[in-house]
Image (cartoon, rainbow, N blue to C red):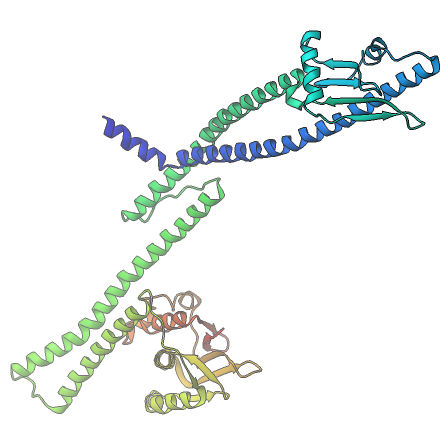
Length: 462
């Protein structure tokens, strides 16, 4: 039982609601800590400033009253008495700890101590006189000494009224913090419930997708981040559907492309073994041709798999483009002429940093694609450069147009148009071109114009 409760508690603490509650609690703790530090250091400075200000006002009040008593006594020609001093300080607006006033002769003329009677005051006076407290002179206008006095202003929290106020303020702060914590937890709990429901709904939809369902209705979410996940999940589901459809089609195409040469080779070999056909040069050449097709298909699959492997990086080197394309023209020249095409090169002096072997595969595939599916005529290869001679684009243009629906999908991995199924090939050529381009950080696209009957493949190096 305890283990089951602990497991549920652990699971709950990993959930969104618990994490939001913990976040609220940590925020309150941090807020309380910062507020406490500010109140502690700030209140110390404020109270010290208050004590200094009150002390200065008290000194000013005492000196004004003592001067008034001294001047009044001089005018009347009467001595200064304790009664007169007591009357002068009877309505004192301050609450000093004590006040002691002496005459010019050092005899005590007046004393005051809050909360003590006269007996205790006498002991107190002896302590004041003996402890060497700071004394202040009160001088008349002629510079003669009228009185000397000593006083102390208590700290803010030493006064009863102030102490009660501080105690009430602390209680208010504590109750306020408690109520804020309770309300924050309540609001966080009710606010997290719809978030938890949205997250649970997304989890259910994604689990259904993971189980192979490709028609999952993914709900929209009011929360921005959850809504972004929802939209991304919808795109992911569509991509998975397209990918699976492409894989099924590709599997059928590859099976067909493999079955054709294998069937031909098997039939020829069986006929030779049965004595129906003689193993002459023509038949052996045909067998060799079918084997070459099989080898090309396997090599294309291996290359595409290697390029699309995570962590693959091309071997970069700088090479000059004019001699590179001259070598390509020399290599493909006979094949291009046999197909009834002509190759035109427009390559300015420039150098490219790339994997030369893979870049050559891109050009081979694009030119072969133009020869296989284009109309007989000119195939033009052009390179454009910036002002400083840096290559910007490479384009291969041929005669013939491509439908828009095919044009938008012809670089999709494993895709073959219906018309392409009548010719040899696995449908991997343009997929390899795109994979190599992306491995270099390049982009590749195709554009076609039905009016001019021209199709152009553009490889952008920027």
